[in-house]
Each structure stands twice: as structure tokens, then as C-alpha cells.
Length: 349
Image 1 (spheres, one colour):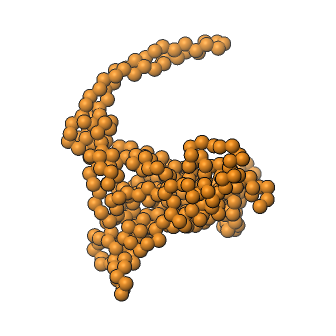
Image 2 (cartoon, helix red, strand yellow):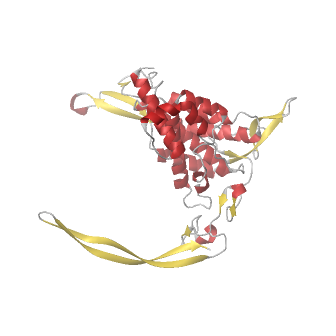
Image 3 (tube, rainbow, N blue to C red):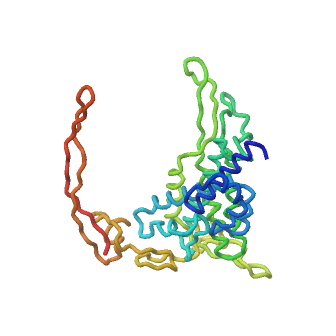
């Protein structure tokens, strides 16, 4: 292993130890522990995932960043819903969380997690912080008047490694594994389908007679919005059993005008109806809505009627104070007034 490889190996170990223990130890401890011991201590990993962890600790650190990216985006998208993705963040590990109920929320969780991992890996390849990948070299020829240049994101490597890692826990041919694999693929496809082409013009007076273009990742929020739209149109499916082994082979739409119709690759799918998420229930992944803020004037999901499940709400009045009407005085003074405003806050009973 060369100097560069050794450095990346140690950096990867540092990241892994931080994920496991929450702090960075001395460098001597990193070398002494080694990837094998550290990877064995990470909770929630399937056996095949531990193998990937031991062989590519730097990539494992990137995968962890992608998992956190997925959690953050999930919580943003569901911030006004009864299930607000907070149960996922309370799990003991970044890896291994799964809804007990195979609902459409579980489908979104698989998709956003998969897209976050694929996104993080692709980004790491583009900035040169991950080995065995770099820029997408397949884009060398363009059409008349423009050419590929710069560093196109290596989306192929991002999708491949994300699939290898996340699908490693879905090796059984159960209905739930089929559902999870489909939603994992939908998440990866969301990253691929939302890639953007960016160009730079060349030529006299910016005539743009020649352009150099490259493919790049969009802001992750765009992918989150895309998947949330798909969540709202999630498809109910059943596992089709056929052949002598009587094992589920594929997923078919439960409600379709055409028989034996399969869901599209971009569809988020689910097997079971969602619980109402009104009350705390560890088995369904529901933390309940007691104490959640609600919007009294809204008829949507964030409204007090829906969010509080008919239990009613408490009203709390508070005073907000902030600096306002600031004026700048030469040379170096800024004078502000203190503004106050009485506000009402509503929380579910």
C-alpha cells in the first residue's frame, strides 16, 4: 500500500471510529485497532456489508455520510407529517434501521437512504476523496459545436457501490426483501435521472460557438423533492408467487387495469397499509404526535386537526425578541433597536 493509500486507509479508520464511538482517538489507537476490529463493532451491518467495510474503510466512511444525508433529507420532507422520520434517527446505528411495517413510509426510507449513499459516493469520486474512481471517462465525445470536458461525475461507480452495499442485506427472497430492493433501486434511479449538464462557452465575445460540457450532481434537495413526489403516488404491490418453489419472484401492482403489471423502476412501492402514527407504537415505528407543533390555520397535514388526531391542542403564548431597525454610523458602530412580538404556539395534546 502506497503513501496515498495508507493515508486514505487511516482517514477511513478515523471516520469509522467516530461513527462507532462518537469521538476520534489517538492515531496509534487507529493503527492498533485496524479496520477488521472496527467494522466488527459497527452495529446494524449485515455480513456482506462488514466485508465491504473491512476491504474499503474509506468508502465506508463515505457511505456513512450518505446515510446521514438521507436521514436529514427524510426529516425535512416529513417535517409536517405525523411520521416525521425521527424514529430513523433514534436507531442505534446509521445502518440497519427498517420499518417494521412494509408501508409507503418504509418505501420512502429505503429510497432516500439509497439515494443518499449513491449521491455521497458519486460526489466523493468527483472531488478525488475516494479510491477506485474519479471522473466519468466514458464521456469523451460530444455533438457538433460542443464537447465533453471538465470532470463529469462518475455516477456509474456511485450506483454500483450503493447497490452492492445496501442490497447486501436483502439477499433473502422474501416479500419485504423484494420491496426493499425495488425501493433501493428507485432511490438510485432518482440520483441518475436528476443529474444535470453544465456547460462553459468558448469563442470570441462569448459567442458560444464552442461549448465544453460535463455532468454533475444536483443539490440533494432536488432528489428529495423528486422522491417525495413519488411517495405521494406510491404504488401498492403484491409479491407474485410462481414456479415449483413457490417463492416470491417479482412484484406486481395490486391495483391495475392490466393484469400482471409491474411497477415502474422509479415508483416507490409498499406491501402494507400505513398505520395512523397518532400514538406511540414501537412495533410500527410510530413516536406519536403528542407534543408536536401544529398549524392552527392549516387544513393540511400540519394542521392541528390532522396532526393531533382529534385529541385537541394546547396554546402557548410567548414573546419573541430580536434586533431590528439597525443603522450604521461611520466609522464602525451599528445601533439597533430591540423589537418584540407576541406569538402563539400550538402543540398537540
